[in-house]
Length: 256
Image 1: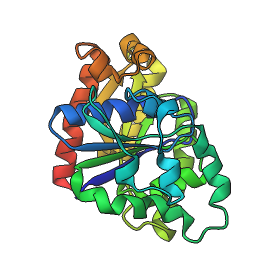
Image 2: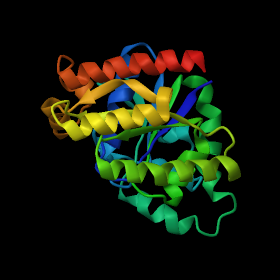
Image 3: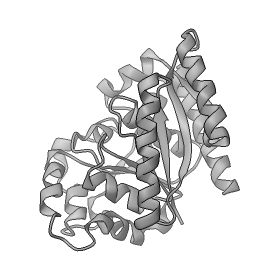
Image 4: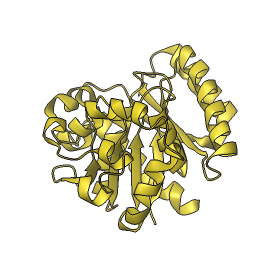
């Protein structure tokens, strides 16, 4: 059965989508069967996986409204080696349309159940707010991967996220836990980043992944070509770091 993970952080611009698509591509490259679910109406993870969101006939929006199944809506990204349940602007309307629906926060969980056996990993890219879409992701997941920059404001945002995860765990999803914190866009030359990194390790201990993703131009360029950095330039430092992270994820899951 698949391990389902949300990539979430309530702070914007911390590299959630970059983490999701590169981890998906990295896991695919080490032989894992992966489904990437884009829960952000901007559809960046869809486009960054080599799938044109404007040409999708069915998206995660149709799945949440139960007018389509995951099997019907998913598409294969041949270049990246994983399946994509894509999103586009239509998804923004799902919030309003689900307002009066019973158990609306469990729609995604129910939809994923029939295909869980087909995958080793399901990765969900969440929007940068605690919305009904994010809640659907958190209610579906076994755990949360938190990408974060080693900066002061990131620590403040992390406190809010941890509290949210505790509430969802207590009330809606007993399986939910923090799998780990991933330090991204890391520049070891900046003293503050080193200090925040040490604080994270002191407080969260083994919940902090060993892998550190460096600030890397090639990773930043890759989305404009519609590819994860791991596929766009496998030799880049950032891409190699994501390959290490994929291996670390596989090892961590074996121990769970």
